[in-house]
Image (tube, rainbow, N blue to C red; front, side):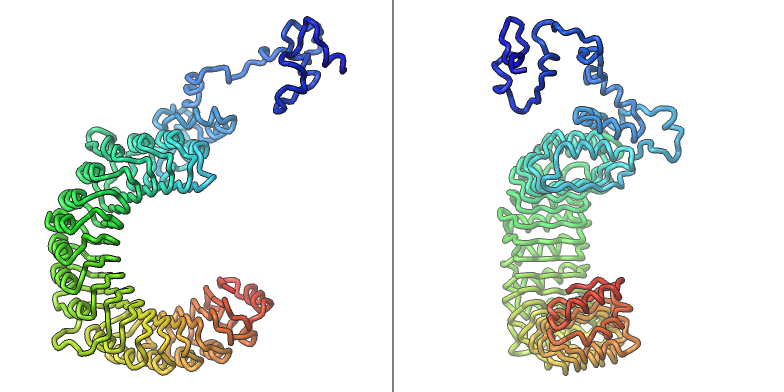
Length: 609
């Protein structure tokens, strides 16, 4: 054998030196040497051991055009999927076949419950990170075609997906309705234009951190008229575009002036200017939900123009976050121009003050919900002016982290109570105190929901005012992190509103003890959700909750109650007959064996430990 390997006569069986110097990735044997001669072999192959490969023809020798014609006649979903498993080459060829190009055979057309093509578009697929590749997209395009059709596709955090993969989705998934792309840097204009041409039912597009997508996507194809493409255009379209630096005013202007019926539009972190706002105000007649976030190039003039254009005739919900162009003047224009506006959210709009807030609520006659967060020029006077508006239909009012609010020194002389307000949230406003609560007690006598999270400046005296003046029963009360409240006010709450109370959150109220639980157990028979995390609760308090037969708790949180021990196991098992959620995290006096016992016995209940 060494002589054979080192043979270097005229009849050479290999080139390029010895076998040891060849590419190590190739697996060579002596048989391989004889099977690949550079001259005619001297060895007779009478047994067919070294038959020429050309004697075994393969379908692979057919050109792609012929394979394509074969594949488009595979109307059976099972046959298409089986063929796609042969090789990546076949998979990519199959994924290039449009659903409309598949030729149905007689058998599949006669089946009523078979695997013939359906395009209802109810299937959902999500790819993220390393799992998102062009090959997987091709497999989705082939596999979902005959199984109901792909309706929703989400691709997130991938640098491997390219236009090739999205071409297969566009051609194989005409039923696609919802497309979400987050942090997909290699997807550019051509991919989305391909999708828009083929997927005429697309009604929701969410683009986030797509640096290769530009105005061309919105200009070249979304400018189409209904007569120039499929009649199956979606009745409504949702657009969300975030952090796409190449999309500017031209793209937004084209989108808004197109024939599409836009209902929801969300624009965030884009280099658009006042021109886009003016176009939105002029052509956004069908928009019902509009969200504008972190748009630094928009000024007061743009928001004023959007409101005064009076084209937002269907707008019912508006959210503006971190846009310094929202001022008192522009807010008043929005209130006058958006006549059917019902829900308004302002976050980090630092130039809105009391005057703008009051004028806006007076102009927006149909406003039902108002949320303000980190609007630090809003004070207690803006609150009273907003809630005392007699013509207001406001049902929900929320203030979060508004640092301009201070406790009242003197009560306003002239104000009227709100007849419509049902939900009030004052959250983490550190300057809010008892005098402000007394004012709200007079302004809001018809509350159902009350959220005073994180108000360390209030105590029992201030909360008593609201509990006693509320003419209807409170249903949901959140007093978490109100550290100065005691058992006294919780007992009053249970006695006054126990017949209507369904949710009570006392998380972080460190002065609340077993006395409160005893009052809750006695009076709150309709309570479903109770949170006493980080309170001074002991085994006696848990026993009080369990001994009353009419309690029907669904969720109980005892997180951080370090004085609750193994002795509460029987009480918890009794409560667990109705519980679906139990939080025992931080209850260090309860042993792991007891936790395991509860998990076994309360198998219907999700237990956190």
